[in-house]
Amino acid sequence: MRIVLIQPNYHSGGAEVAGNWSPAWVAYLAGYLKAKGGYTDIRFIDAMTDDMSEDQLRAALADEKPDIVGTTANTPAIYKAERVLEIAREMFPNAVTVLGGIHGTFMYQQVLREAPWIDAIVRGEGEEVFLNLVRSVDQGQWPDARGQVKGIAYGEGEKVIATQAEAPIRDVDDIVADWGVLDWKKYIYIPTGTRVATPNMARGCPFTCSFCSQWKFWRDYRVRDPKKVVDEIETLVKEYKVGFFILADEEPTINKKAFIAFCEELKARKLDVLWGINTRVTDVLRDEDLLPFYRSCGLVHISLGTEAAAQLNLDLFHKETTVADNKRAIDLLRQNGIVTEAQFIVGLENETVETIEETFQLCMDWNPDMANWSMFTPWPFSDLYREMGDQVEVHDFSQYNFVTPIMKPKAMERGELLDAVMSCYRRFYSKKAIFSYPWVPGDKVRRKYLQGCLKAYLRSAMKRQFYNLGKVGYWGPHTIKKVKFAFDRSRKLEQTPDEAATADWKSASKRKQEEIDAGIRAYKEAGQPLDATQNQKAASAKVMACGGGDEQMSEHAMLSAMGGCGSGTDQQLSEHEMERAMKPCAKGEEPPLEEADARR
Ligand code: B12
Ligand code: SF4
Image 1 (cartoon, rainbow, N blue to C red):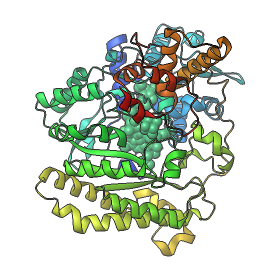
Image 2: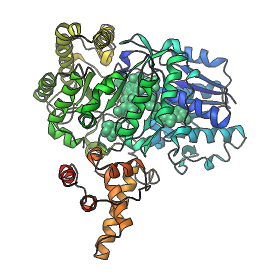
Image 3: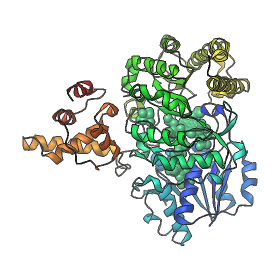
């Protein structure tokens, strides 16, 4: 069985400008197929890093003779991914073509209609589903028995069939990556000048930010054994000479115990590696005393989802943080020698030149080391889309990339929005380049790192790759009117993923919400308090249903959140937690957590 995996050649001048990134999906799928299925003949073509034309891809594929060709797609890469599999179909009509990743997971109906040459879409977490699909092909049961492979979607005549969703992998320690499938010399991170990887410690997120798709994708929050993750990192460092990694996790710090155990283990092994994470402001505040320890373990870069300067938008995004929290978190990180990166989302309907300027001024006041301004991007499968979908005019998904203004604010042209964002970057980084990065006192590692980041930015700006500036024809404020985003207006959203299509796609928070609803109904019907078990279920349900805040809750509530769906624990909850759990959660409403803590 030969399996060929391909990273489609999609570029958009955002996060990628920091270097060439090694794709984790390939390593995790390859590792699982080998360990669990004994499938060892796995090849990888990185058309993105090698910036391959279609002819080059054909040439690379020519000698492969694959039985299965798999590719990946987030939303903007979808058309490139479809094309990759079309080429594979033309070249190897008998090979089974498979698509995985977030976009197809939710948009499988549309994708299968526009790309009927795709034999199967693997929905959600890929390892177990892909293994079963590969086995089915290997055992000659494909395509007749494909309906028995859980977690896939495929076309049958005019119909699109989605098989029952596969459960998220319970024992995540079964997931062992094989990073050896990559050609490591390609993957260099510019800020450190070393090889870079994105290993995965935790999957999923217990929060439910309305603009985000990740918590839905992974469904349950699960954490791998920190020791095993460090084993993986040790292999990355010693065997593949990786000098920098970013945890690919959505939320690596929410399970404080696991994160501390991870740091301790990493420190004990004395690996020569620096690393970074994306996390939430609230976790930084929670771990104020631990920040020096984190830094001593090599954690040099924290990217914070500060998202919006205006409290209004923080509430809209269900971020459950405040503007004041954001400033304090950045101060704490700076004091502890950790590079801080603040991320802002701009370009909502109410955006104006003035609000962007306000965001900028606030950012200057917070004074992070780095900042980025992403264009609000309305994933059709996000919750926020339900509220604002009718305002979305552009359905050319190739431009859903955080750097293109998909939404046009009422009072701004798209070119103006891009210009306002570029003005933020220009002013922010010129000031940093002159007054900050060369003078970072004492800390050589941090200084070198920041100068490396600046180099990466400048390099992509010079090549006009940053934010696709060359492609759209932006050369400064005088070109605002000439900027062309060249949206393909013929692209339509065929349908938003409907409830029926995703009925069995239950994220932990959705299931918990159902439990709460059932609990409340039972309470109302019975006209009396619930028994202990019912109470407990409702309380653990509450942890996730509100979209966060649980890290300030009791250890007990935290444990139930970590247990994922319905696992619960047998500990009793305080009366107050019960009450709070039973209270229906209005949008944006924060439960009175401090009060609960004070009582305890
Ligand atoms: C690392 C990363 C990158 C790296 C990518 C490295 C690489 N080549 O893979 C870099 C920095 C280059 C990058 C760039 C971009 N990224 Co990015 N990135 C991430 C990040 C942080 C982690 C992804 C990851 O490795 N996860 C771990 C792996 C194991 O998970 P996975 O990729 O989902 O794969 C699993 C399944 O999806 C499935 N699967 C995936 N592919 C396949 C294929 C087959 C055949 C099968 C069977 C299964 C399968 O199986 C895997 C194992 O379970 C995520 C956020 C997050 N925390 O997840 C954002 C994220 C994926 N990025 C995102 C975006 C938008 C972008 C950019 C457009 C931003 C920009 N303008 O720069 C570009 C697009 C670049 C491109 N060509 O795709 C979005 C996608 C959202 C969406 N709805 O599509 C995310 C989710 C961030 C977010 N907050 O929304 N990114
Ligand atoms: S904290 Fe919010 S934005 Fe971040 S991964 Fe979780 S749900 Fe998405």
